[in-house]
Image 1: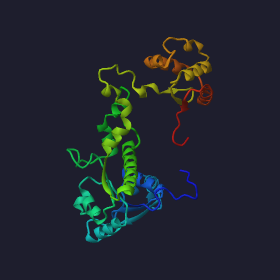
Image 2: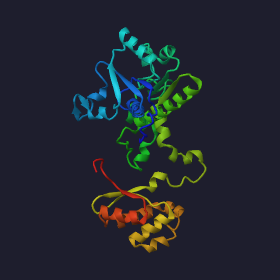
Image 3: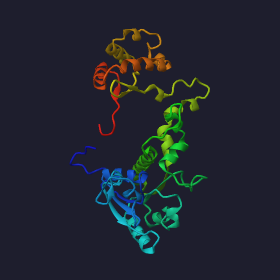
Length: 321
């Protein structure tokens, strides 16, 4: 984020007490640190498990840990001892935000729940990121990203009619982290108006479902209507002579440019493809035609031509490309 040198970072002066581990909470608090907050990460005496979960390792830290914990100071405490709890209470009195991602009852059992910490500091914003929220039959269950992905209903859609597929990234954790971040920023703004802190609960399942499902919910909103083509079916991966590309033409002028590049003027006048609505209804047929055209061409030349045509396609890269 580019910030003029004359301006302080947006969260400069905000103090964050971070009891989180692994991804959802650390991702949230790391961005607060990016925004200028002073983040103090509180770890157990053996440390955040992600310090040693996944390599490569350098100076006693995993690469995984380093991706979610920049811009933080840290302290190791035994929260089961009176001395450890006393330190937390002192830190909480000086903090603006507390973030934790334990199961819902853990902090209360330690004597450090939101009621205790907010009694010590009424302006404190207390944030609990959990799998399923503080109430209900799922509340005490452990939650990891893949568990939430399975419950949310997106995996069958990812499988495109075959076996259910996970996103091979911790998207549910990160969705929860970003949801918590936006809630914290809103709570800080509200506190400027009324002077009060508050408790915020961010269930991973709710945050993830709200993030990935809205564009698929048309048939739920209007159950008596023609469901049409699911939006994600329009964008497909096509093999080329030496790799793959991904995309789809949506607008009419994009389709016209694509046809000119492919030297397929016959497609422009084909009643099945002449307008966006017709292309959507005949997406499988159009995709078969594009597959045959694209596989003749190497990726670099194909992408260059597609970009000149105005058609929105991209090469399929790995993360090192």
